[in-house]
Length: 350
Image 1 (cartoon, helix red, strand yellow):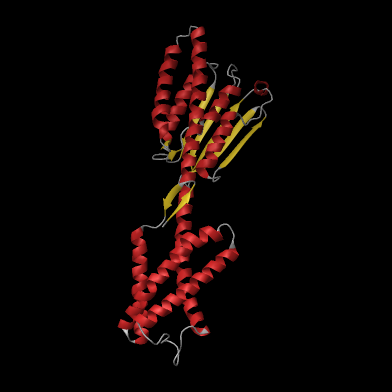
Image 2: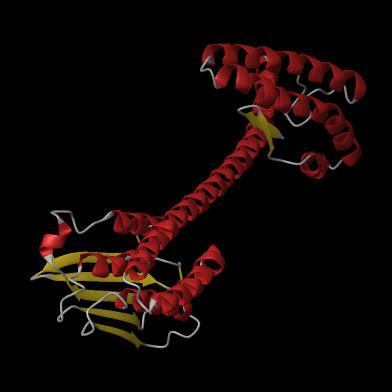
């Protein structure tokens, strides 16, 4: 079975499964009624007559009546055509059974029964509706599951595309800032400019090659952060302090790449780098419940923020990535107090 959406056909049930279903259902019916009448030859003949009619009605209902009447909500027309189909099927089935199978048109009923009586019509119609409901419900259940899986697949593709887009926004943002630093150092004719270029080369190798993966080793991310901080320290006051603390067993820990960068960038962007009391504290802790806690604290000068919110573009981008990756299953707290900037981020590792 298949259905069409926007001109594209999506196969839901392969043809071989149609055949398997009907053969299985046919065999079950032959054994069931053969056991009931203790006459398997009669059961086989009657089912050979009736099953082609069952199959025809099921597929007409699924592929014609439902799309043409149920979906457009033409329920009266659906009931009319279904009733006419059931009536036509009753006449064909009863006639074929009478001439090809048995003169006793209703052997399961008590006494001698005749065709085209009210009770016989009701019994045959209910039997056809049973087959119709069973096959149609199976078809639409499989359609629903297939469509749900397809929607989930599309959501996953969309999620991957959006994550890649957000990562691509982070990379040029960082490189432009670093190139500005190199430019400033060259204007000052600083001997450290060559060191900066080497650090930038290491960073570019990480960003271009390693962050293509959905997860990277935490140790690699920390090395990358160390290189970034080394670049920034070249332009800071010589008394600037940066402490990075790692606690817990982080061997083998993998995280989404570049999710800490924007917060660390803000330290140097809004911090008073020329002050002799400027410092940055960073910690990574793997907790007992397999979470990773990232903490950041730094001093900053409020006047340098120009009234902007502590949630800058880089932070907004990172938070959007966190939402997409962890589906709100994380904790993030960003605050400032007494010329101090705080970030507390906890993400699951499983």
